Image (cartoon, rainbow, N blue to C red; front, side, top):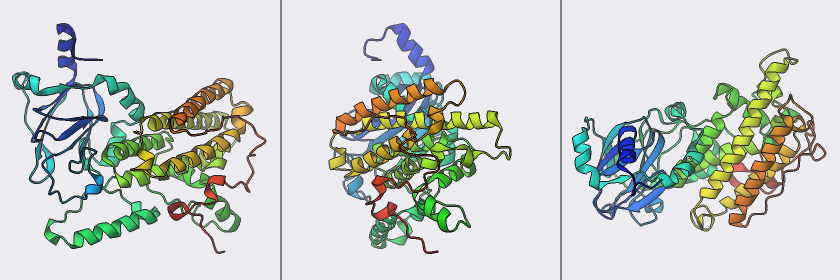
Amino acid sequence: MSTSNLTPDQAQALWSAGGFLIFSGLEEGSEFGIDGSYNVIRKFSGVKFIPPGLHLITWSSSSSSSSSYSNENAGPSGNSIRQGYLKYFKPKERVIIRYDHQLENASIIEEIISDDKLKGLDKEMASYPFDILEKWKSLTNQIDEQVISEVCGTNGRFLDGLIGVEGEEEDSIEYKKNKLNKEDEENNQSSDVIEEKEKLNFARFNLKKSWRKGAIGEEVTKFSKDKSWLLGDVIKRQFGNNPIKLISQLQLSFILLLNLSSYSSLLVYKRLLNLLCQSSNFLSDPTSYLNNNNNNNNNNNNNNIFQQILDLYKNLINTLINQINSIPDNTFETELQEFDIFYLNQIESLRRNLNGVNWLSNGISEWNDKSKKELEISWNKLIKVGKKWNWEINELINSTIEYGNENEDYVESDEEDEEGEYAPVIVEI
């Protein structure tokens, strides 16, 4: 929807219902964006007509050539590191942000914004880019205020590409190496200017310890490769038996990765996607991992679990379609080298696991055939999107021959040659 040719009634409707962001302190030539749209600004005072919902405001100052931040996370225009403000806007909400280019940070100004003040700034305020709204919603449709509160700690949070994640050192060789490099840089600075920033609280789990406490022998061997027990444990303990929160966090980590070049968010994203795609036994029989009812013949409870997991994986496929389609050209040759290989490995593992799901083939209540068709349609869209990158993604053909429910000898082909962070673990018994 363009705002350049609005009728007076349409403009008034947007004025009455939309949110407003007054942003001051950025000099001409700085980069400013909202929800993935970026522009180099001239005379600029903010954004008007912001739709209710989640939004990510981003900027990088042109006047920060002496920035203390690492230039490796600088914006594409060569400006300083990109910073952001993540907020779930309410209808008609008005926010003032002031950027201090000397301190290179921004802050919220607690002030009531009158209609007269907004009208005085109107010509210097950019309209929300409605042409990107549907794309933005497709990337964030499972992120609600509760998720923002759980991960960020508050509704309205300043972020940048260097922000950390609680517990990321637990499961990342890459993180430890990166941390050592940062510590070397910080040791050259005065200790009184180093401030520990509050970290993000994504789900915490260790892919290298993906079996239950007390497990031995065959069980350790099985779940060191197949992450099914860990997936069920994360859903039960950290997400209150709500599997869709995995997609919420996958989406949130992706938009922070894509728009802020957040290395920590990259690690979160990889862990979450690995967990979802490397859990073959979980997909075959989710009730074994999620059913807390001692009565295993509780059909209503089982059907509810099957429905939840079906929704989880339908959302996963659709989320991957939208995410892969939104990645800028040349990303896999520059910022995220070899990340396309990671994607292909996870997608192929997911395809094989879906092909081994008996309950999709043999009937769980009346929605079985319809659900299979929906999965196939979404998978075909994923194949089409993959062609943007010249990926060869195999078709989804549901069959119980390739994998059975009790096939514990199954080893994902994409993990055979893994190195580094996700290398197989040798367990001594």
